[in-house]
Length: 390
Image (cartoon, rainbow, N blue to C red; front, side, top):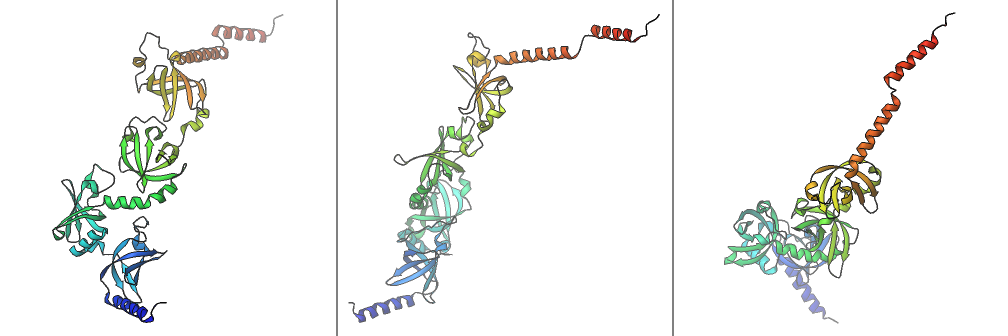
């Protein structure tokens, strides 16, 4: 059982500590519990303070800290206990506060003034800092000016000459936040889910998309659109925000496959109604293979003209006869909507036209008798209507 006198002494010391903390003072503490509206902060001894949870969230409403994290805040009230706030602290940092933030690994707010050689000049209150270009963002962007004039939170990674030489990193802070959010992000990444991410890099085979918490997925070039995409950079660029569908998740290999075309209307869904055998259609040559010519009839709908239906003899060069992007007419031979295949014919175009011409000629002949037969019929009818002479 504890000694009452020792308990009283401890309580008295704690109360004296609270009294010594004044309104407007900047103090450091450790977050011990995060509730729905307020968080408890241990400021030393047995003293605890409260701070609104809203001040611990970023612009998107996500918590920036966790229980056990160190916190620097300003005392805004001592009535009935200590109330803390971070508002105004990060933007009004003094050299001493910046040094404390450096040692305690706390974020500091700064405004990107301008792009300079190798990075950016960042203003933190009256202090000037340098942010290397590789440390301004997780995504490397080719347009440095896009960060100018923006206010971000940074970590001080170098503090020299009493604060006259500061090097800061936004990327380090973003990576820490990513790691903290990675587990939560992975819960939402399941097959069939529709998620929003940011394009990290574009390669010849597709694009890597950051989905949050450092988790990346691959948007393969074949999944970017229903039409054949030859250059992924024409569809997305680094830094773009995209909404994609999760196609496959391989937890063991940490691979996530994404799709963009699955969120677009599938042109093949009505191909069976739109395209019928015997129809004459116009298309564009997209590719020539050993077995035939591929023709795009509309974005996402492509058919094959087999070599036997090209009308080109064996000794002729098919690629010269059907140059890429050339517009041609074809006849639909067969449509397999489920297999997303269509057989076309170039040779059949002339045959179809000839059959149309024959049918039109036949219809005209049946509908309009010749002039000689018409005249003879008129004379016979006239003669039969005259009265006979006796």
